[in-house]
Length: 105
Picture 1 (cartoon, rainbow, N blue to C red):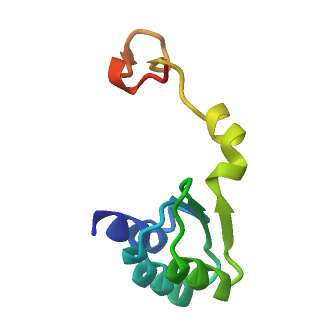
Picture 2: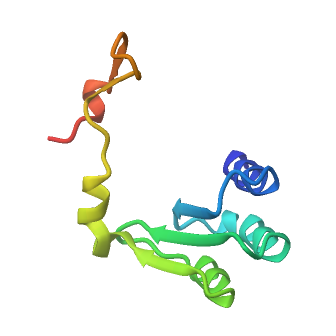
């Protein structure tokens, strides 16, 4: 539910031009259909996780010429987008580290 509210809220407040989801959850079909109907200039891209696909979601995206992407075919792009283990604020006075359990082996 929270994802749906955030998606629609970002469109309503004009905080986004492109929505990118990594999911195979059919519960997101209704909010995506709402966005496609009421915010036709917003682009929706869905990345399906490895070994997961949802035909209802796939069909909903394709109807409006949305982009369907298989995560397994774009693994390198996602690994390049991973944030560093330590992130510093703008002036370098403070930092935050990712939890050890989140680190990839």
